[in-house]
Image (cartoon, rainbow, N blue to C red; front, side):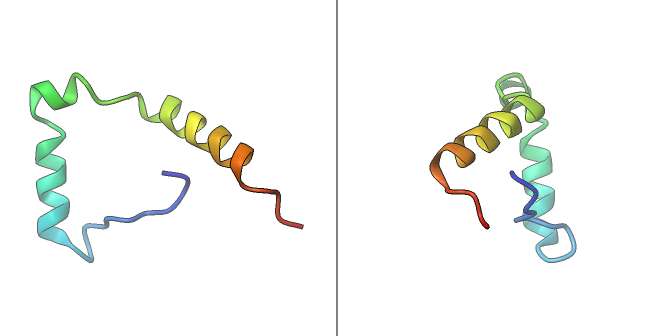
Length: 54
């Protein structure tokens, strides 16, 4: 979410394919949050909870 790739096609190809297919199901696709908005929210949340590194 914040620049870390957890699921890559090269390491877990079948799981990656399943996730991609799942995200295309209309009821799922229509209810997924906007990626950029979610990323901005999670970044703000992390900054408020984790002290800055020196």
